[in-house]
Length: 446
Image 1 (cartoon, rainbow, N blue to C red):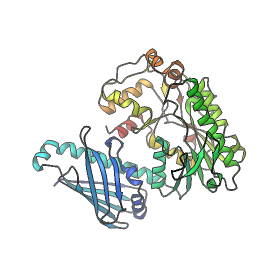
Image 2 (tube, one colour):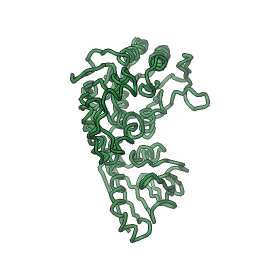
Image 3 (tube, rainbow, N blue to C red):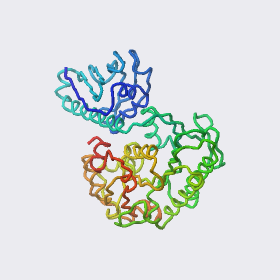
Image 4 (cartoon, one colour):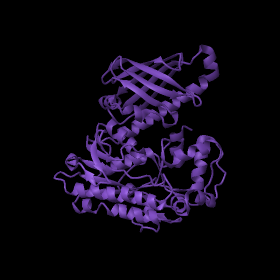
């Protein structure tokens, strides 16, 4: 029976590690993004007899039901689980915690015995190692950035960034409450169109994180769509800022989502938070979007405008939308590929938001981008390398403009923003993924 073992130093004691793994959101933090594994059901916590059900995608598009049951649990030493249904002939996983140390040991057997080992043993061994190295890396990063428990309210909590932020905060022991539009969903009710909000429910939070808004790239920019974008972002921010300013117990900090589109077409100039706004619909939108928070700023609430770049995540956003093309071998530079792309890994964006919440001197504009933006052709090459696919087929600017309309194509794809995170770096933030290739390799399972 093969045995896999990995141990890593961690900046946490055994009790902290056990508590982190005990929280339900931990499973979402530990699932490798490239695995396409879906959590179906969790019955119980870490106690003996608790079960977790996954749909796991092992090879190709087919998925298999995987049921694991906990067979040992001792606080804070660790816990064990074994496969009771799934793809392996046997699987016994020992999770162990000690002060400053995390370790995982897996005793496993492939299906159909010696034949399975001969045919797929090497591939499965590499897959197991890749998975646990990812899990240890993320655990180390989360542990290194933990803070005292807080109450945080989030708009857009069900979106790409909001979902990742919610899992991270809850896994770290923080209370997270979403702002919701649907009356049948748990959370704080608000409605941007009707300009209504449950102000009383917002009293006493440590932080409000505002991520909600209609998707900038979801639909072509017709006049009606531009109106939707404007109202959802400017009116939504104004409603929140006005409400927070009037609270008896306002939040300590208001993080308001924004975008690097503020800078317009920056060419190859380095852009920092002190750079002026640019021209175009998106630049005007962002300037007014940030301006809509004026009442919160005037009320003395520390306000941070998070100007986000292209978020690298396989679960959504611009990267996920391009992956089918790249996997088919059709990826490559767009519109010449010289325009700079201000990118950031999803984990670093989540960590940056948390950093802005807990770092009291951070306020005003803050670029949510990695230290080194790259030309679009370099991004295409890096994606291709991570997927082991060619990435040289060009897409002419004219084709993009026909597909999206000239204004949308130019402002979202042809414009370049060499935006650098000067404010983040000056505040002492440490990037988990400062290098593009490492970020893509980790996200895509290279």
